[in-house]
Image (cartoon, rainbow, N blue to C red; front, side, top):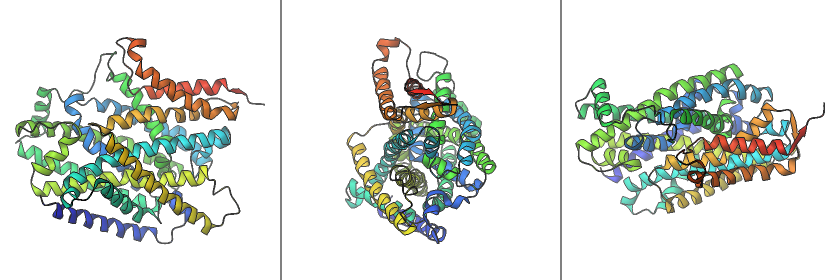
Length: 482
């Protein structure tokens, strides 16, 4: 398909986003940007959070990994569901009781300023690394499919997309994102379903026939029972629980949408509904991945991994499917990037700079600071996407989950310590403990075969990281005076 035609659809889609952004950002202020005036509709938030949770990585990497990992990712998804339940009934009540704008203020209330700023700093590090990895994957596909045909360099493609995100988030923030994410999630899921229907029709398969074909190929296996394997079902489910608790429940980007809902009860409904929907959506992505591999085998196309879906959709399917794929891919890109940049701006302004604590700053001055920080994060994203281009990998979802095990572990330890104990910390040692724990985990992961033999540590490294942080915090704590 002509790159010019594909580009015209991208432009039309972006214009639609700008119209939505314009209508939803009128009358916005800092509270609108940070927390949506605490007036978001819980159903819109739940639906839009699907797009934020999945991103372009899920759209491309999860289907691409089916040949290697079968449906094992669904084991992690079962853990996700249990994690959403924990968030709804353990963390959300804490956040609502304290009327938080930044969830890391809870650490300040419970443990002190050092823990508060350390938690916010690890969130910023985690989100920058994770969100830019997701952004890189989609930008790279758009570069190959569209912009390279115009001889536009990769760095300029990335900058253009980041400026597009800037345009519709600059004023409205969360207030706008709740609506744009809903639109984008609709387009992403619609695109996925259309691709599934097309492949079933092309291969002359119904649903039962498709599952039989996947079973013959060994693609549909969900549960793995070898305890030594990284894909052992208990390891994956436990990892999924703590990935969700940390990457959603202890993540400002995800929680700023949930706590923008008016009441705790509605926010809890949002979280539980999100958990149920994610089970269905991830299973559909895995099913799509199996169908893509069947399609590729039928057409003798030797492509796997992250390149499979783009290659088939753009070069071996009808033009209309190519257009739908590009729109769905962009729809998967924007929710994971716009929300991340907005949340990073909010956390840096509130947690690190403390603009809400500084009573000398009026609303206009705070807005100016917030806008400057927003621009800075646009350029930070540009730099990190270029770094990922330099170290490119065949499966970005593996990189993202590995990064999460190191960077979210200290957040898990901090929140767990604050909730499960009543001890006070020697605050000056908190940053050291939170840095040493991931370093210990790195060496544990690197030399695990010498330590554990045939037993392999996978994503449960996140839990180990959190436990090490908890132990370290306990060692630098003392009983709280009665």
